[in-house]
Length: 83
Image (cartoon, rainbow, N blue to C red; front, side, top):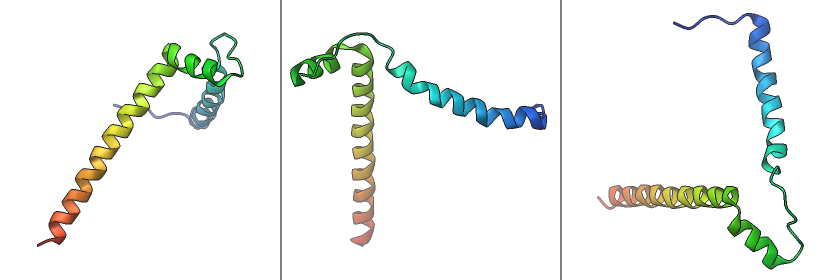
């Protein structure tokens, strides 16, 4: 099912991944605009850019999910120790 990679191709895979990861900061700062130094401008920038809103929504969803998992695990531990 899977084809074997040549040793040269296998050694290029980590290098290509490293190059792609190194390019991420340049891609992330690609949106234009003057962000200003005022804190209100910075907050408005974070609340008005779609990429920042998407990242914030993802962070919030992960925080809610993580807290639910943590509380569920703590509840399971306390119920088994009560026996």
